[in-house]
Image (spheres, one colour):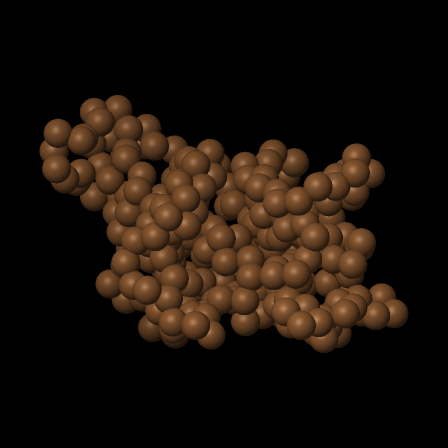
Length: 247
């Protein structure tokens, strides 16, 4: 280990510090309907990163002067629980939280049919309960599922993941020390498993070849996330169908 805590090597013999391969996710978990009082809710996990989302609405927009007679108004709020990291996070709004809230709003606005809900508001809350990198992507995945459970009309789900450059290698799903000490970190999202990109944020410098590899790996990662989201929705409605049959 170096004096500042950085591991000397984060990839050894093709394996990362947590034992994953270069193009391997941490365990993915998706669950829907976890909050009884929300119109829609979901959790999404990348390993130790745990995001919870609750959706309230569509409902009558207040204050009324903000109502749009032709479309709904979307408000997203992202925050991290004080206990989500090793060092306690100060409660309340932060510059980072405001920035990510805007990112979530812009991404979700690509899929919601706002014109179906005139004069209404849709509130999307994302809370990171445990953080170990890739929080905005986990939050976006959870929010997309929560909107679907709330019955909000959408073109498709949004699926997100991270890609990074660590020890000169392009890797999928940045986590742990890779987030703090890696060379490049990319947050990426697509509409479903399609090619339309709705989120691309990159810190760091890469070559053209590395950039193209990042895009390909991120698209593949989003397709895997999309499959996990769809399976969670199917499981939710499958359970509902079984309950109806049992009655």
